[in-house]
Image 1 (cartoon, rainbow, N blue to C red):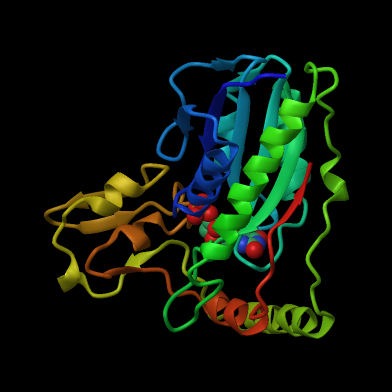
Image 2 (image 1 turned 180 degrees about the vertical axis):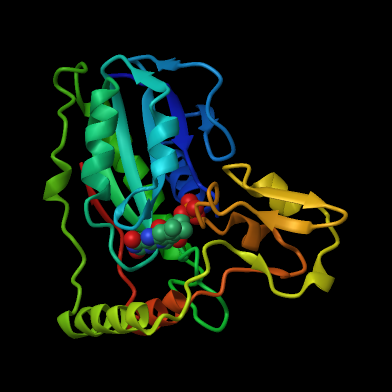
Length: 281
Ligand SMILES: Cc1cc2nc3c(=O)[nH]c(=O)nc-3n(C[C@H](O)[C@H](O)[C@H](O)COP(=O)(O)O)c2cc1C
């Protein structure tokens, strides 16, 4: 079966899902690529993808689920029994139900899932003081991503038509080993932390107002339009709109915008062991 076009579709506030999915697309060696980036806004109208193209769909994991804004925005894409390679990217804790959810979502939208993958990206809450999967996806992750893309292209080439291009059950994917004790200690520490009344910030914030030059990069990077800048009030983040994706933290050149949450320390402490990408096809 010949497929000579890839539709790359992602939601990626801090860029890790984007980088992983771009490496996958490169690995397929299919030259014609269209990009549907739903990070900053919803599509203005429904987009239909043809059965003779491959969709590569990548999203981050939030709280063990597909990031809710991604779900909302992906609902505007439509397949026509279009083969899809789906990927969830998570911050080295766990992806829980996310891959199954993404599979169910894209299947309901008319895609045929022919491959699935779970990759690791630097956790959005990671800081230099509390690094969580810092630097991921790294060289090895991107190499694995490209190889995954190549293997999926080979799978397509060896099928005669869309009927013989078999779908996969993403539940078969091997979950990375999670040692019991760090997980147990993490859960206990989290419970203690919640009981202690120590506040978890509801949004990123300006740690030092003087660092802000009102350059607007935070506003431009925010997927939900939660940030406003004004001469009298400075930078304000609407907690009702903020999804804590930390795109603004990454965008701030002067490192003035931060998201310092006690959760980062315990994630950094108890999920030190680096997980590896897993794929099924
Ligand atoms: C609100 C929120 C919740 C998250 N929940 C999880 C989680 O449950 N498990 C996990 O391993 N990583 C979690 N992460 C980390 C992201 O999945 C990870 O950083 C991912 O690489 C971000 O993708 P992006 O760079 O494409 O935005 C969470 C991040 C955010 C912002």
